[in-house]
Length: 321
Ligand SMILES: Cc1cc2nc3c(=O)[nH]c(=O)nc-3n(C[C@H](O)[C@H](O)[C@H](O)COP(=O)(O)OP(=O)(O)OC[C@H]3O[C@@H](n4cnc5c(N)ncnc54)[C@H](O)[C@@H]3O)c2cc1C
Image 1: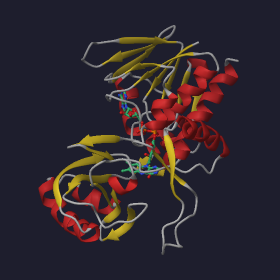
Image 2 (image 1 turned 135 degrees about the vertical axis):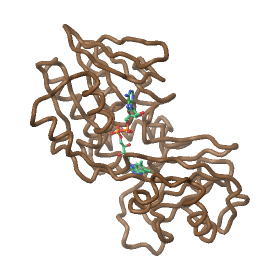
Image 3 (image 1 turned 120 degrees about the vertical axis):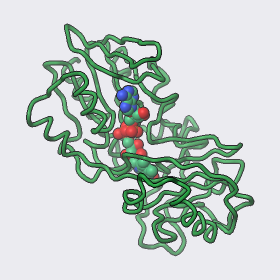
Image 4 (image 1 turned 120 degrees about the horizontal axis):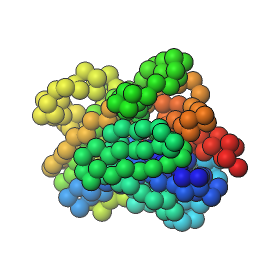
């Protein structure tokens, strides 16, 4: 069967790899230049910086099995399971990408067709699905089955643009999904920071949820910071120009890091952590050949988003053995 998957985040990529393994012909459609979604790594002035998800855990045996492949391929390495002096933190192993958190997504999609820089504007169900690109090359992709894994707000906008109503229950479940937002800063440091392994601290100062040095983390040749502001601070300053909200956070970060930030850019993550989910790991409507997945279904974090994609693929494979 020909299957199109919208969104190359971890849920879409896990779903794609499972469907390819079952013999389907899969195209992953992604508006960005590469795969990974919120598992994002960026180059900046010679530094390499993870700026969305920082690590993942593998409490679920199914993800653990996939992770063994990524470890063998050298895409992923164990990062840390304990931070000295922080007995309050869980002791599960956190894994990071060897050269950035996008490693697993790259591994999962190596046998799929990728349609990158493709913003899905509309989807139309006639005999089959047609997925229309907005602007660009105006590509149209045809598929027997469609899997949508983009964040719920964007999913609803797409359904709306496509005049597609999934019925009262599903539409209200989609409407209920809520994510926190996160303002992030990525910056270059003038010297190595004073952080020790693992090179990351949680809640080191007011309004900062996460602060790390990507060099100590092991992915960057140059000392470079990732800073995630708290959800409350992010909401409060969402529309504020970065020059107004960044200086105080940078001053706090510099104190913790013992280094100066010589340049920085900001990123606004509109969907960080789901605080209200759909109520099931995926939504599957075989009558019209449609499946929905993502962390708005599976729940918080990479691990649950991946399981959502896996269970979506299992539902499709069950109908089409
Ligand atoms: C700042 C931040 C820090 C985080 N830290 C961690 C962490 O340390 N550990 C952890 O486990 N989790 C963390 N998370 C959560 C984790 O990143 C997510 O739960 C998970 O990656 C979600 O995967 P997904 O496949 O559901 O969605 P996404 O990764 O968002 O994938 C959806 C994809 O759809 C694409 N898309 C959207 N609209 C369209 C369109 N119209 N056409 C084509 N493509 C489209 C997007 O570009 C995106 O690539 C963090 C998230 C953020 C934002």
